[in-house]
Amino acid sequence: MMIQRIQTVFLFLAAVCCALLFFFPFAEFEGVTSFIRFSALGITNLTPSENPISFPSTWLLLAIIIVSVVLPIATIFLYKKPAIQLHAIRFTFLLVTILLALVFFYYNEQIEKAIDFRSLSYDFGIYIPLINMLFLLLAMRGIRSDINKIRSIDRLR
Image (cartoon, rainbow, N blue to C red; front, top):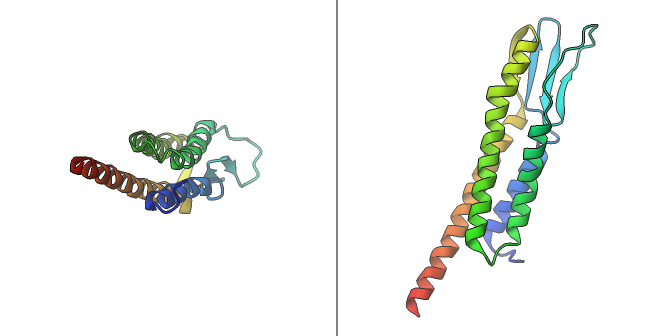
């Protein structure tokens, strides 16, 4: 394993960022009679109520996060195949983009429809995918740099 490559560090940090999504909620919704916490592990009503509110399942988010944790770690071990590394990082980047789109455009609307929506506050968990994307972009830049170095050495031969 090539620990001295900076992209290895960035890929590891990207995996750690995605793993942090299990511990930090995305947002908290305040309704007239309810307070909802939205995280990767589920949507929880923090106020006891007589009428349980039905929320969509977050299994898809959970699956995307698990793949987004495992894929960068697996990509570290593909250091002899930089082209495959680039494809894996691009796929992870796409997954994180889909994760953000689901959070903002699907789950937020579903929660707002389910409760008498009054206010929304985003927590640290919503920023973690953006930090993850930054680490993925930095890792891609490092891998491209390696590919360019290999090409320039091949030209000299």
